Length: 389
Image (cartoon, rainbow, N blue to C red):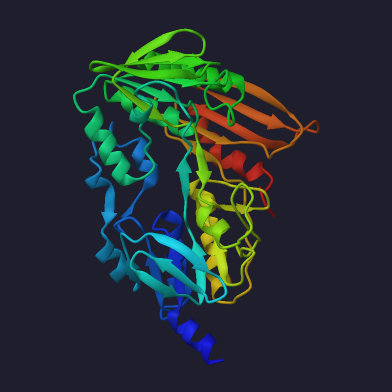
């Protein structure tokens, strides 16, 4: 029994200081003011809004200005201990301890909020090592330094992050080329007509698109980069940003023998296959779903906090539309569930476009709203089925 008591005194340990980690602690504190909470992070432990990284240039915010609260402020506000600049190297699920670069830490319950890494495609050419990814505040600060005084930026990837960066940078007067293997922008989220409308607005703003091709090689020539595409054409640029998507961080869990799929596998209580170990956010997979967006993280945190304290709770996902931050044509999308059967119906409205994915009997299963049609968000979201009941 003593062993358990000691462990409950060691409290809840959370690895990762992203939105997931901090939101879980906020939810915990609503339910229990006293339980010891320790946050372990390889970052400085500050809080910032990660979605702002792809919109900060046009709004004239520096990396430092994106930090809303420093580590000391977060520790005081949430009455917890922050172990910052610490790398976690191992989890011992039997002894219930984690090994970090700052020593061993015991846990009663452990939460993995490890996040995801930007996928890096293997590229040819003598400048392949100059490819930049932006996945946290420090990388963003580095990116801003790199593009200072430069003019042309090439972006690999026309997904959510690629399109947001393209819009932000073009508003900051950069010349932008976007390259994607897909035939359109936001290939996983938008029907063709909606993608074309978005592409057109971004083209008007100055974005150049290179679809249905990929990068063959990237080479440095004096002070510029030559990007050779698989279709034979070349782009001259100053900076190359890769935004081809995210892959959940699984290594730590795998090494500890915790079950993984695309993400760290969890049930509706967000429990992993290891006793007293939970996972949340971009690294977690619930019922085959990995949803690296703000709304699912908020939902999951509300279910995880009571679960950690032994109260009955189960995660459900209502319909959660995703906002694409492209001011040239604001876009909100709630994609139909994987395998949903139906058709897209396109309605052009003054100053925008409404795309509805409907089943054969006319039920709304998904939507994409662009421009003025984004006003329909509330009404249409109510009609959608939940993502996870």
